[in-house]
Amino acid sequence: MPKIVIAIDGYSSCGKSTTAKQVAARLGYAYIDTGAMYRSVSLFFSQHHVALTNPKAILDALQQIHITFNHNARTGRNETCLNGLNVEEEIRKMYISNIVSEVSAIPEVRYAMVAQQQKMGRKRGVVMDGRDIGTQVFPDAELKIFMTADPTIRAQRRQIELLERGEMLGLDAILENLLKRDYIDSNRSEGPLRKAHDAIELDTSFMTLDEQVDWVIQLADEKIASLHRKGHFNPQDA
Image 1 (cartoon, rainbow, N blue to C red):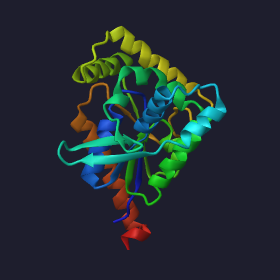
Image 2 (image 1 turned 180 degrees about the vertical axis):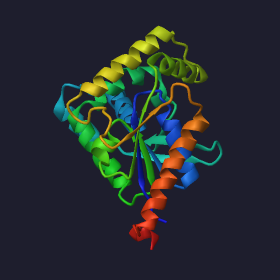
Image 3 (image 1 turned 180 degrees about the horizontal axis):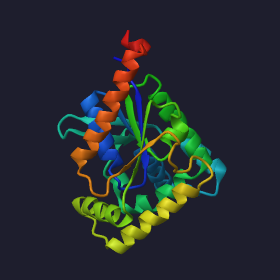
Image 4 (image 1 turned 120 degrees about the vertical axis):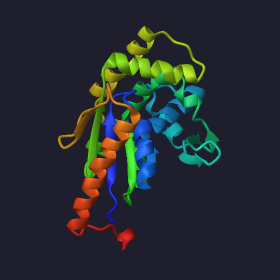
């Protein structure tokens, strides 16, 4: 059967990553968390005191950053590794959330990460979520989803995630952070957050995770079946 690229874009805390992981698992595809890549860059910049206004320091730092993804068989979770070190828990903390949109808006950072992402998905058979996957990273993706949700509901979901990690923050502070990130992500010059013209919108405000995953899987199955009927096969499937 032909393999496709599934691009899932949208706002923070809409369920993109969790949905993408489960869709990839059910299809037997690779999952690439582009948000974790930008968070890892943000962590490296924070740890090494890289000035976001210094292009040379940024380029030098990017040369030292190597990001990989591992599947932990014991926990069943995907883990993000920065230069060989598991940083999955650290990059999800609020201090990283407070800087990641600013870091990811830097053109040099986006060029470096987009190149890595395109290389990862070159052979198809991937589910990739982020902000500009369907518009810039893989404009030729066979299936594009744009996820959105009510901002207050998104903030409530984020609050629950933080509590599960031992961080206690008020709903107003989380909502303010999300809205700030929305503005930066949507207004940056390089790879802004926007819905691709051929993306299908999914409002997850009142959907369960299972409903979200089933919805995307149905669309993927229909797209794969359509390509199969037309005789579109990937070279690696031959």
